[in-house]
Structure formats: C-alpha cells, structure tokens
Length: 270
Image 1 (spheres, rainbow, N blue to C red):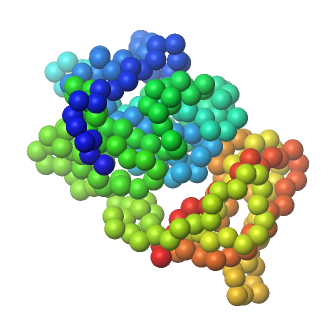
Image 2 (image 1 turned 90 degrees about the vertical axis):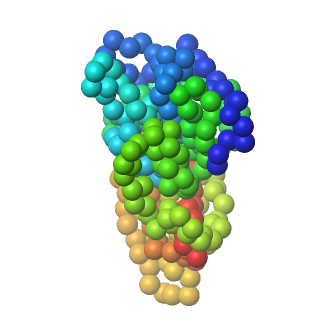
Image 3 (image 1 turned 30 degrees about the vertical axis):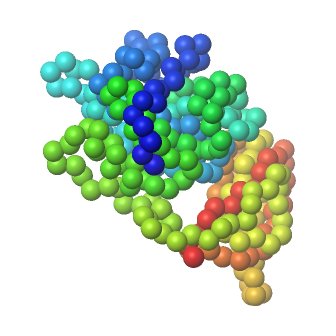
C-alpha cells in the first residue's frame, strides 16, 4: 500500500546491532548515509514459511535494481536490507542465521535483530513485512505478509525513475499473481499436527536432526502419499504443495532428535 502521507521518516538502524553481508570496509549501514537512494527494508525470519516464500522476490529485486554508479564507482539504485527478527528460538542464534543466509543465497545486507529491537521500533505485527522508503528516507510504500509483489516492484521503478523499466517479475507461484482469488487456509498450529486441514500447502518449522515421515490423504479418497524429509539444520521445511486449495488429512511422524515447533498452512487458489 502507498503511505498515506510522505512525512513518515524511517527509524534509524540501531547502531548496536550486528550485520551480515556488508561491503568490504563498511561496518554498518545508516539511513542518513543512504540519502538519494530508495531503500527497501524486509523484516523476515528464516523459520517462517511466509518469509521464505517471499525471498525469491527480494533477491530478484536486489539483482535487478541495485547498481554501481559508473562515475563514482559507489553503490546506487535500490538498497535492499533484510532485518532478521526471529519468531522462533533458532532464529536468535547468530550462527544459525549466518548459515541460513548462506544456504538461502541472500546477498544483500542483513541486520541481526535477535532481541526484536528494530521490530519494536517499527511496531510490526507479523512476518514478513516490507517498507519502501524514498531518497529522503520517507515511507513511500509498504505491505504486510505475502503478496502485492507487482505493486512493490512498480513502486521501486517509480522511485528509480527508470526510462525503460523491465516488466515486473513473473509470479513464482500461481497464488502470487495479481488478482488471484485465494481461500482461507487452516490456522497454524504450535508443534506437530496430524489431522484434517484445508490449504494450498503445508510447512513445518523444525530444529534438531532426524527424519519426518509425511503422509497425506485427500478427503474423499483412499489413496495416500508418503514421503520422508531428512532434517540437518533448523528452518522452515515445505511438506506438501497442492495445485489449488485442497481438503486433506495430514499425518506426521518424527524420529531422531527432531523437534517440530509449528505446523504452518499456506493459501491456495480458490
């Protein structure tokens, strides 16, 4: 959504917090030193399925719109900043975040907000949430949750004043398309869940090591599908992906030193 007014200033990036992926010789980023450049801030958590599902767009915007000024050799264009604010315990461990950033191929700077200090500065209510600020560090566009990717990219292009902007990114998933009609999914459940659900997909937030056997039976049918997932690191793991909103029954069985922190459901096309 577009900001209702153009006077909402970006909160400062707290100096006591640590960074990942900074350019060589740079100790930290400051909003006032990014003057003249649009800044896209994404609050995320590598243990949140919704954050993981949004990452492809953030990474693509960084690749498309972060440039180097040919005259000064300095960074220009869009500055993408990920603020990692954990909603689950594994996300508070610095080494786990470092490994997740590397595993997920996140190349733009990431601020480690382990104690949710930046989260409280922005008064966020959930994950993910992104804020686009103009060259004066004033709020230009924002969005809570998944979706509205085309809207965000068009706002980025407006701020960059591109003479010949590329077409917005193609949707990664059918339910990401503008105007897609989605049906409400089953609410997320703390811990492992077995039972009926309605969703476009199922994820699990896992930590420890071991295996998880996932069995799905479509409602009204006798056939069932079973697969086994091997877990070697904490994070959000996709368990089931349906083409559309589907009614089914789920059964989860774990072995080893594996712990399931939450079972999460994602929306599907109506």
